[in-house]
Image 1 (cartoon, rainbow, N blue to C red):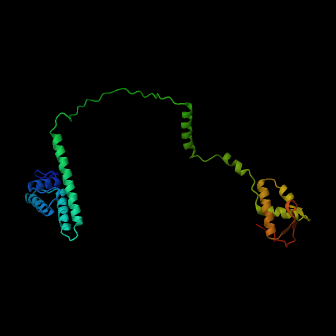
Image 2: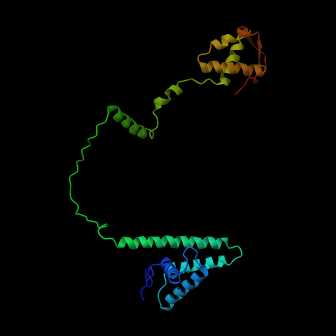
Image 3: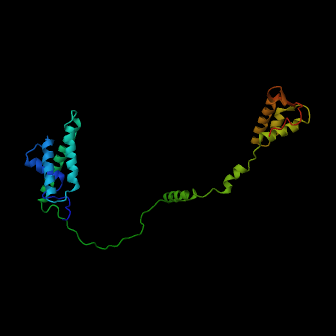
Length: 242
């Protein structure tokens, strides 16, 4: 026998069957006696099987659901069973209302007729007719170009301002100052700083003097603008700061 498709006898599905049983046995849909409903439902499902009808899975799922609700309702703490029973009642009430509205709509005539006509070919003007301000066009162009240029490495000229600046290391400046002080006598701090060729050179000179004073290779005397620096005689090799 060919398989049935969601319709067994006069029932469209398990909800339709439950409504039929509630109506037939005059049960209260708002307070379903679940034990009676389970027995009646399983009896109908058994009749379907005895008639060699292929029972849709939806009917079997509802049967399992009803049995579960009945089982938890028999437990000492039956709050879950009561909740499931009310949930089933709500679904049945909603299904009954939808079925009533569907039947009412099916009896209406003329209100839902649809008349269509064949498609007609018509010409489409593809000319772009919107007028844009020149600044708006420029802004759009720059946004598009900007997105494209983000993927391109910056030109070498962009680094020229960084590369041309000479970086003076503190170690090289220490050697320079020591060489200058080795000529003998005291040298003014201001003279060493004023001979700096750049800001980097000046900072390196200042740090070099601090390092020489810290390691006690030079002696600083005086204060303010009159600070003088004198190199201390040290064994060769101690001035290697690399």
